[in-house]
Length: 218
Image: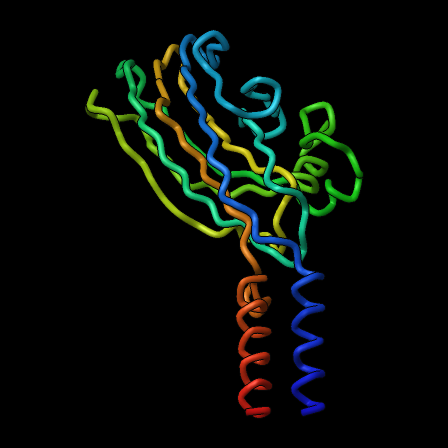
C-alpha cells in the first residue's frame, strides 16, 4: 500500500509540474514577386509586424515570423505548411522559387528579447546562422507551365526544443520574373518530446493508481 501511495503522489506532482499541452496555431501568408523584388503591397499574412516580410541580405531570403508558444527544451515543434504558387514570366530560364521554414534558435532565446531575430540583429552570415535555423522544403526552377503548383508537407523541426518563433522564408531569383504565392498556411504545434508524458497521460496514471488502491481495500 505504501508503494501505491508513493506512486500516486509522484503522479499528482508530475501533473502539477507539467504545463498543459499547447493547441496548434494556424497562421497564413501570401506574397508576390516582380521586377526583381518582392511587392510589399501584394504580400502579407498573419505574422509579426502585421505580416511583414523581412529581407535578410546575407542569404537572400525574405522571412515572415510567427510566435510559436515560447521556448521549451522539453518539447518539439511539428509544422504543416502548404501554399499555391504560380509563375507568370517565362522569359528568363534562370528563374527559380525556394521556400524554407525557419526557427529562432536557443541562442536567440538566451538574449531575452520579446521579438524574432530581425535583419538588424544579424549583420553578418555567422550571426544569422547563430540565431536562425533553416530547413529548405520547396525548390522550383524555371517553370514550363503557367498552371499553379500546390505544395503541402508535414515535418518536425530538427531543433531539439520548441522555439519561440518560426518563420516562412521565400527566395526568388530572376530579373522581372513574376511569381505569386497564395493561400499559404502554416500550422505549428508544440508537442511533448519522446519519452515525456503529456499531462493527460499522467492524469490517467493517477486515476489507475487510485482504482488499484480502492480495489485492494475491497
